[in-house]
Length: 607
Image (cartoon, rainbow, N blue to C red):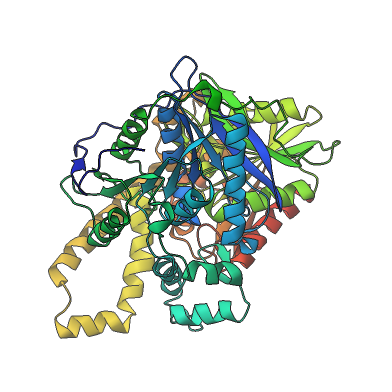
């Protein structure tokens, strides 16, 4: 097909791009697509009725935790495309997201087969797969799929990765950095690769990379010739600076593509590295530029439209877990339901924290926990808060999650009417959100609070002073820098003075704080007092699950010890505390994750 070829970096969005508008409440079709090794969870965002149809896009996701961090951007993009007549299929390959299997059993070849099944579904039930959106490492997979699936006309690439080996090396370095202070640590990426070569899985940041996948990653590269002749390529890079140009390595790859005969448009847009950062970030300029690209596609002939899928037609028969969409006021929340014994009387609702993740949780920890709970007789609903993951609306945060939690409980009770009560499970911010909600709903009999979030400037100062400055004074490296003159004494003293002032201010504030009295007045209270008030008013059982090596857990302990509002609350017989020794905030090692899940299941069964 013909297309205008632009020089790399010649198209840029303004730096001061508007914030992403609240996503329209487009209801996606949620289903489970049969895969060769189990069900594949899928969401299809159909074009808005009445608009000219321009084809469908299959999303080819990024790798490991990047998939988690990109999910909100993907869903916002799908809703923006729906307004332009473009449908979007978001499919979780085997062992990722909400799909069947474990990450350790995944292979590159398996993922390619899964995504080809998605393309086939679009041909049968959508408008045909007009384009592929390859995100980061997914760009390499998208190029492979474009070669195998003849009908793909457009290849859209978000911050594409060009070398699987380079990407895998950077990924393995996360493990090395995490173990710097351990005596028995891994010291090089070669050491980790040797483990894979010996047939062992390599665990990095909560993900276990099987030997086959590790070897496949090392052999991947972006194949210019694979998609040069048939597919128009649009290359998007995100840069912090509005006037930044395409990276030299990317420019070289673009030049090679053009030399091979490809038509390439390259766009540099302003925005954060949302696939990388540990906080929730969006890049509205990227969504705007990608939407404009698809808006220019020609209208599809009606003959290209597939047959609408009948309810359940594309789905795995009687799945034990499946995706669904529930309503929260005018918005739609995406969720997954894990079925259990038909006579179960207690259900579980898992609420994901407000960082860059969706209902699967960091490194799929909540998928694993939900499956273990369901296997032990407890049906589980996991869901995305408004504006998070695949849910519509604006992200309001955990402090405004009361309607979301109520909607999730309503849905679980409606689908499992034999249930008598519900236990809520939440980590970090969502644990605090549970404390704002649980006492308001008589159906809630239990709460699992995992590393609750009670952070204030004053509370953080308590932890920094004890766990950072005191450790620094004991560090030989600190004294070596001081003697060598490589230490900014004045700057450090100023920083220490700020921390000490916050520490003293916090001591006074916590000593004066007491429980809030008026039920409707919680929002006006300081966070430590709000959470304490919620805990005091909730009459059900509580499991406090804490990580042994986590600043947020330490902040909670400091606040509880210093605040009058928390006096005696954790000593109540209905409260049980469990600490997972050495664990980080999200229990990213297998034995930590299993210990946390076992603690939750054991606590519920012990009732």
